Image (cartoon, rainbow, N blue to C red; front, side, top):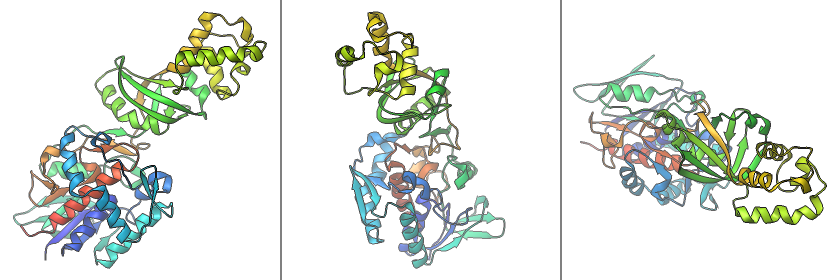
Length: 407
């Protein structure tokens, strides 16, 4: 019977342990937290969007993107849904975003924990791994209180995102010790700090917008949804979606600007016409009262300030130049990004161990036979919407199955 040690009890670690145990291996799961799945409990605002029906490769980012697809096909979204249904999860579909019907991430975590126990996986919690050493035969995994011998080791330690959940980058250290290179790692799926001081005046405002990221003045990425303004800058899912591109561009010393279109369904001329039609009834209004029913008051104030329209000036006295400047702000309000928020606020990281150092769809290391790597440790980061979890399920399952096989 093969002895497999899984280091890390997150999504990919639990999946790897279950897959290995189902294949007949004797499995030990080591986790530094007091229980498995701590970060998983936070996903989807505690509701756990555990995968997505739209599995186009564009939703997964990597320096070697073509190597992602075979892994996702070897254990697919459909396989994931079947796996969880068998464990008792009833799936709720929200426009392709899949959740447990309970709307609680704890349901997903608990069914995984129960399956670990059913399979008699040895669970070592509140246990920190100090080192992983390759031996003549197998590995020696050393913790503060014990040394585990293993035929195969699965590194499922996560990245450095959300360190409060135990993701402190240990896996990168172990990977390096065992011969791997670890590329630059940066925070992803996070908010951004901006240069403009008027962002502070917008703190607390939530507004639907189309978000365009310009890198050195050229359109690079787009998304849309609810943008959240904070005292430091911008947040919200569409900001998260483009943040990884901004992080890499800033790392390379490039200029990053976010442009917000607050009326994405209307052209410039449409907005001009809307303002003109309202003029009959708004012509004696001043300041933000001219934009009532279109924007929140805080946003109206900043739009007018940027358009250089005095708050005391009545609507009928606005000049064509002032209206043109206002239209530009409504359709192209710009903010220069100074930096992305750190690992503490990031949901995942971008970068890590390159996929070129992994053997096909087995997830086995090409640097150290019998070693397997999964999840965020690898250079794959997904968009919001269940993609990072799908990568965790796919890579974890494949690692577990192959780690359990006799060489």
